[in-house]
Amino acid sequence: MTKRIRMTNVAAAVAIKSYRRMTVEMGAPARSLQLKTMHTPDFLAFPTPPLSGNVDTGLQILDGRFTFGGQSLDVGENGDPWSNAAPSEKFAFRLHSFEWLKDLDAVATDPKLNKTQPHQVAKAKTRAQFLFDRWIGIFGEWNPYSWDEDILSNRLFELLSYWKNLFYEGEDTDQQSTRKRNLFRQLKRLKKTYNRTPEGISKLKAAATMVLGGACLTGRTDVYLDKGLDLVEDEIDKQILADGGHVSRSPLRCVEALEILLTIESALVKREIQGSKQIQRAIDRLSPMIRFFSLPEHGFFSFNGSGEFSAKRLDNLLRQVSVGSKRFGYAPHTGYQRLERNGTVIMADSGSSPERPYDLEAHLAPLAFEMATEAGRLIVNCGWNDNQPSQWREPMRATAAHSTLVLGNKNAGKLLSGGLAEQVMGPAIQFPAGPTRSSRKEQDVGTWLEASHEGYLADFGLIHRRRLYLDATGEDFRGEDSLLVPLGEAPLTSDLIPFAIRFHLAPRTRVTLAQDQNSALLIQPGGQGWRFRTDGGPLKLEKSVYLARGHRPIRTEQLVILGQAYGDGDGQARTNRVRWTLKKMGKVDQNITQRKSTSR
Image (cartoon, rainbow, N blue to C red):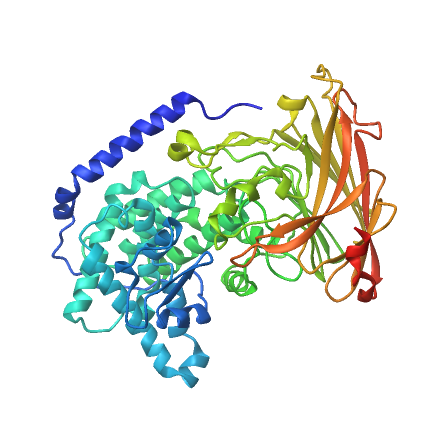
């Protein structure tokens, strides 16, 4: 396990950050003058908005209530949030990124509201214009926070995407001209500071925003279009892998990248500008990955910071692309395996930690898996989505928050946590959970997968090997977890090391633990039953949480196989090898689990 971040890296990051802070503070007056513009651009085209917002959230904003990540700010029906202290930095980031525009757009374009409450449709446009005008009045000249590169590109992308429905008025008024000039002012700043935009999806969005500005606005904007297209192609090369995954290994980033590329493609088509073949190829690679990560009943598997996703968002995305008829079960570059038979789907993480600087949201979850059936999710990871309280973020990246084996109560890798290093480098992975190896066999009787990782090799001298099998009926799922010293290596110890194999259960899954502590009955909503058995143990039932949806952790449970492995084992003895099975039982009387607490 190689250390990625050393003190020399931290020192260099401190120096760069200090220099940038100094230049921001000392150069603010001159910067404000540099961004002055008398040019009032007109729109030549409008892109298709990347995604639809939430009507209910939009109606709350009309009433003056902004909600992000479980936190709220109530400014009243005629107030604005710009003169109020935000509940948190994360809240302020999303507020100044104009993330709320999509929800007002949802109100402004909702056909049902247009018939039943047309005044709300008009009010959504008026509210959006008022909030932008107030922002210009307070922050429009310059502000070190709200003009930060990441926030700037997010805000510009939102404004350009939703301008037609919320701001377009045909003939210009004085206020409309002020809005357009400020828009162009922000575009100038983005071009100047692009290189300081954080790596990853933020940089792809910043490059795409320059393309939107160049394609949609008048007035010497060819330079933005040409430069933006070059930068988008550069970021595609860096971020979109050959199998269509994102370099961060996050399903969420795949969705966002596809939405970004479809948005700029729509603007280019409307301007009748020849688009980049590289952009189209990236769209063609990303599109099948959306289906690869999808559950049978819609939604996404939750890995590396991705939440469940709404079916509406995924359906909207898939309507815009052609995913083709060919399905695949292995994403070799992104590092995921999909086992699917007869409505039962297993998604297994067989990849290593993503490389820096794309690891800031990655989890330490080698060989973790999730399982879903036509009845819904069954085995999950604790998951994450950006609406959850920020204090839960680090615990949800831990190995124990996933359905995998935890050795010695330690993570399979190490995150930067606290101190100067995290302040300047971000919550990066200091020691990766890897490397990993995997192989699979597709046969008529079922699918076999074998994978291993070295995340515990440095601390304990053992590798974790997991074997999975899903039969052709989709009703018999088996696993084997082994801990062994690699061939040709000397053991670090011969002592017993405790381990726990965790199976986090989806919320609303009912569970009864058998008295023999070797089996359990799992019942999905609707009464679909599954019998879990193991030759290891004891098998325990413990509390867990689920954060892949909603804005608060949801209480749930987990099955845990406890054991102790010898540090010099070869993975064959019962101490170092545990087998388990999940077999479908058909419909089960749900009253069986009414008194499940008595069996704990």
